[in-house]
Length: 270
View (cartoon, helix red, strand yellow):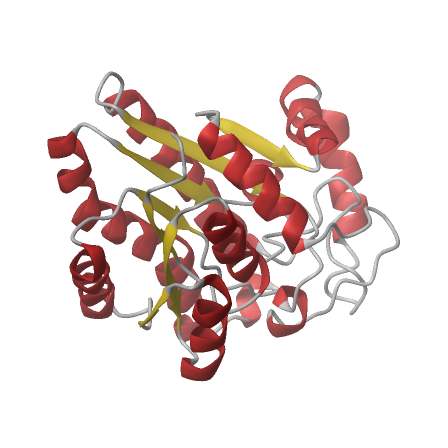
């Protein structure tokens, strides 16, 4: 879908990948709706992108509904939705509280599904639109210490794949973006910083550039960086040795070391 002239909504756009996406979309000629939780940071990104700031707490279903209404009201329509908002958590699953589990599932999966449900009917009626979901390599491979996050991203992957089949021939495109380690504050806020030397983090700008290019080319799926697709491929072709390696590195989670192996690490990255 050609981005120029569209109205785009980017969730989780007050920083990181979302902020880079807002600015990239604006540069490509889209009118951008910048979603965030923090009023000042969201307004700052909207100002740089020449867009409209929209505040909403995605943990709350009613707030997601209001976000959809506000987004539709801003310009009368939404042509492109990029569900980028993500909440990470790193640590043993049995140490997570119920509230932490609920928040990860709500922000990373349920809010994207609900927002899509609210905005998709208008796209179908017009016969034009695009849905883009920022998932994670964690959802393709699993990551020790990030069970709920990985499950939420895997669910988002399956949702997007199923929706793509359902919308075939409707004029609505569906793209999934699968990043690994991205140089943002995501890792610090999830409870443990990224401290491996490999793979090296990529910039949020690189992910944003690849995402916008994928939307314009109507690509169904992209990995950033591209070689990242090797990890889920190896898991599918040789699951036993892959899991042996994953267990070897994953054992470090409870001892306070780094969680996950080189190929499956970098959950979310935004």
